[in-house]
Amino acid sequence: MEKSQNSHRSLPKRIILVRHGESQGNVDMAAYTTTPDYRIPLTVLGVEQACDAGERICQVVSEGGRAAGWKVYFYVSPYERTRSTLREMGRAFPRKRIIGVREECRIREQDFGNFQVEERMKAIKETRERFGRFFFRFPEGESAADVFDRVTSFMESLWRDIDMRRLEQEDNTNVNLVIVSHGLTSRVFLMKWFKWTAEEFERLNNPGNCEIRVMQLGPGGDYSLAIHHQPEELQRWGLSPEMIADQQWRATAVRGSWYDSCPWHLDNFFHHLKDSSVDDESSDEPCRA
Image 1 (cartoon, rainbow, N blue to C red):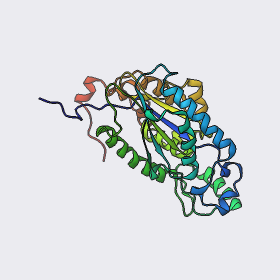
Image 2 (cartoon, rainbow, N blue to C red; image 1 turned 120 degrees about the horizontal axis):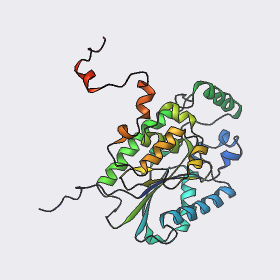
Image 3 (cartoon, helix red, strand yellow; image 1 turned 45 degrees about the vertical axis):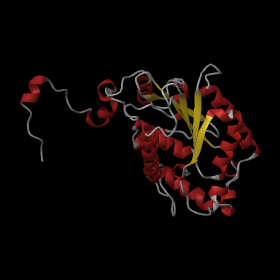
Image 4 (spheres, rainbow, N blue to C red; image 1 turned 30 degrees about the horizontal axis):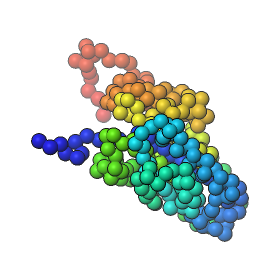
């Protein structure tokens, strides 16, 4: 009997998140007063950063020229600064290695409102620090929690693309996904993927312009940041010791045993409960109303 095309999941070897290069808005907040956020361009330095990021990513996915059969597929935010970043990054890749590119609106920047008055935005961002960065919603804009919802929808589409082999992934092909997006969107993507809590999100530092974060597939079938990145780097990003330990575990773990091997999420809620024994289970009291 012939196997179905989807009888097993052929996963990309890496998912690489890239923040755009330096933009005019990064060096002059007044740019947002007269230019819509989605039209903010890269600076000259931002163009150079994007070219360098392309070279670095090419080295990663080709494993310094040692890998055979590697390919890349790009997802890009529709904003001018991300599109320009991808154009400059693309110079580093042979055309035959690029499977395709998709402009994806759901990985756009957090919406801060329309034209942004600089002094007003400074006051609003100070309020956000007191309120909490994840749940604070900008007037006429979004919260990070809103971004989480649309990133979740994007991930569902991403898994469908993988399951339907729309990325041309074959068992003998080394496929790498590169997502060119924004700082907060990248942090939310990692939060959703690794099931980090809102409190853990608050710890995270924004990536620098054209900084890359590599999620690599481990031998056990799970993705981890700890395969490509060192613990010191993860610490600089804001990951707690427990979050780093989880990444190290994911690098070699077999899928399915997560709560048994790394129970610290359970401890966040149930650390005050005593351990149960087999004897205890037979005499459990009913739950309180």
